[in-house]
Picture 1 (tube, rainbow, N blue to C red):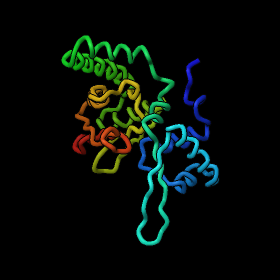
Picture 2: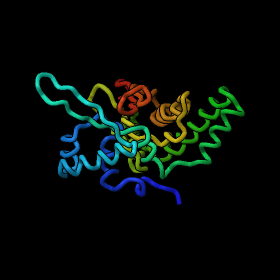
Picture 3: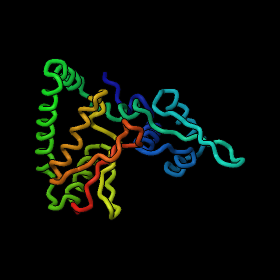
Picture 4: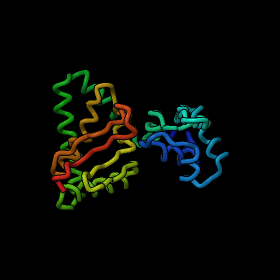
Amino acid sequence: MKRTAETMVSPAGMRIIRLLIGRAPQSVADLVKAVGVTRTAITEQLDELEEAGFVERTVERLSGRGRPRNRFRATQAALRLLDSGRECLIGQAIWRAVREVGGDSFVKKILNQVSIELANHYNRLVTAKTPAGRLRQMNKILTNKGLLVEFVDEGSHVSIKKRSCEFISLFEGTRSVCYIDEKVMTLVVGHPVRKVACRHDGDPCCIFEIDKKAR
């Protein structure tokens, strides 16, 4: 039987993973405040998740005489765990075969066609007229699919923070599959969408932004 996130990690552990994914490292105090349980309960869950390889800690040195503080972040394994229910071994095999048989130029054609197909699907669901409105609706659709995404409208820009990724199981070093995200959003929004942050460059999550003139 296929192991899912629910069978590998307890519900309490999954709640912590969801809080950590796509965000800057959190302290125990941050997690206690977010979850509303005792510090001991949070610490026990973090220890289990760290041992399993889903969480890693860094030590923050404070100025003065303050004691060092541990901060925790989700690992790439946690991101894959969250997406385990959608992982498709056949899809991975097909993707590898396309690259090996067709080469880079053929891969680009495939990526473009896949992006068009996905955009056509979302365009049937997105009804807003403005680029900002369409991006907001896109965010809602992705949320309903179970992805951890956040819509940000701070006046100077409009963006989607993708804390989790439906393509993570297909990721490889060239990042070619990452092209799909940016291309699909551009086609759905009807205005160029820029990727201004990337988890693979060390950012907490991937962020896709619309130029403020598109509002």
